[in-house]
Image (cartoon, rainbow, N blue to C red):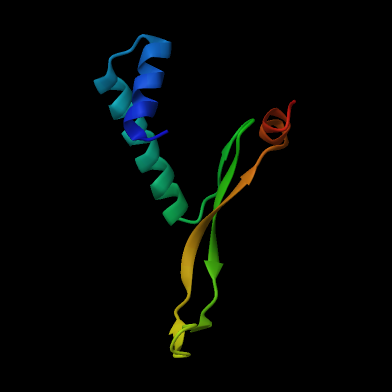
Length: 92
């Protein structure tokens, strides 16, 4: 599901215009991004948690040329699903 499909699904389920849904979704994503930039974990009950983790610098080797490259440290977003989501996904 992409951005527009999500907007359409929310719009049809809640009977709200697509423009209003798009504004709410974009605002939500913006707020979440700002919180993650500050290092604050974001949790959605029954869904999971998003948190920022630091990946240390590492050495990479190109398999074809064997050239070694140092990859600098960077911040990445990690997602941990909730037990509720895990259970729903594994229902048979």
